[in-house]
Amino acid sequence: MLLRLINQLRAILLERGIILPQGRRKLELHLTPLLAGDAMAISPRTRLLVNDLHLEWTELDRRIEAFDAEFAAQARTDETARLLTTIPGIGPLNATALAASIGNAQTFQRGRDLAAWLGLVPKQMTTGGKPKLLGISKRGNRYLRKMLIHGARAALPSLSKGETPMGGWLRDLLARAHVNTVVVALAAKLARIICAVLRTGRKFELTSAAVS
Image (cartoon, rainbow, N blue to C red):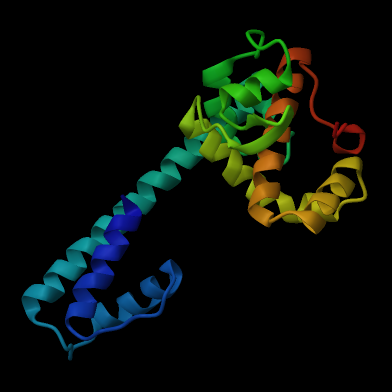
């Protein structure tokens, strides 16, 4: 919704010959003096519309910040969510969503089952008696899969630089695969780690994490 609002603001100004720099922050920085100026290249009615959209944007930001604070507080007080936030790429929002959806993960016999439930395991096709891996299945919980992939993308730079088994595994993958493929592979790995952490009740330790 916020992205739609920002795009609408850009479109209204563009129709009137006002081109603003790309990026949310740059747009906001240019909107403030634009709305405060005495002389504008737009009509008073358009100015009022832009101001109303800007106010709506501000209110959405306030509501998002309030929800983020609520999720962060829940992640601090809920034991399951606190365990999950010890995993790289799992923040308060991911942790609370996962805790609410899978609990202690006892319904999954192994980590790969959770990865499959999230749609993060590759499909297979057999040709000539040899299995060939295709793209991920994308079955299961679409929201959690998307959140996990975003978390993996955010964690990838720091994890790949670490002198840990996971760091070495990621560097090897990056040397022979596209970064998006590595992000999905890391998301699947995180799903396995999530399952192990929830089933054992022990926080994640990066230095001892296996990558098999």
